[in-house]
Length: 304
Image 1 (tube, rainbow, N blue to C red):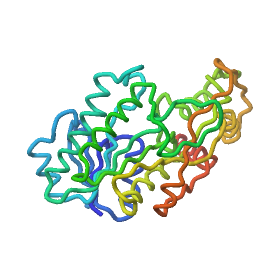
Image 2 (spheres, rainbow, N blue to C red; image 1 turned 120 degrees about the horizontal axis):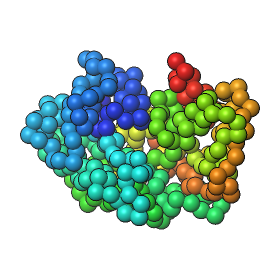
Image 3 (tube, helix red, strand yellow; image 1 turned 60 degrees about the vertical axis):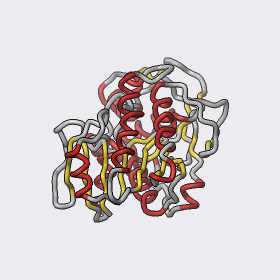
Image 4 (cartoon, one colour; image 1 turned 90 degrees about the vertical axis):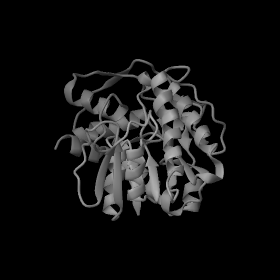
């Protein structure tokens, strides 16, 4: 399969590209600036495209010559502080919404219109519930932050292209794994456990959450492209509810530390848990990694 990937320097995109190459696909990977961190090969080509602007004649020609069967659109602004609070920031609107339109318009300029796999987010759903709740694709969408709103706006913009664009929307739930960095839960807790004295201050240990392995997410995107009916939305998650305190306990065991933690915001919280019956019933995809293995692999990669 010939595949274009946008946002190629991103965390999940890196795992997706690894998986595509392992499966024998040929990849054209786009980054916003000329700083691609991937090792080129006969199977892997790169390009530069700032998707806040429409595809230039040169970009369209590059993609036309590559002749993709599928475009995986992962480029996005996902850092919450950059996306706005109650409404999307200008940057989130330009990249996440307008950028998605530019991807769709480019698809329609090609002689053979490829499938478009748009990676949306759990944040289009309600951000919290009063009990463990497994949400399916028909659940009400009610994002309450700039990132989630921008992703929903992008979904709606792409759906407007209707039958002219073979579209699949994948709503990814929280995920982690090797090579994840930044001020996210797992990297932050591992850093604290490795460097800070006991007791550690953490935000909350009683939050129920659905955590996937990024490698499972990457596999899901490819299987959706190959097997799933278009014009549909699919949740991509583990389908399992785990409490944040259990995650910390597992990391303590992996790191061999007995450091204790105190909560700055105690109380039980319930984030949405993925109902993954739809993707399981319409494709061969199943989550393969248990969270313990994901956390072990994260720590192993971090320490190499």
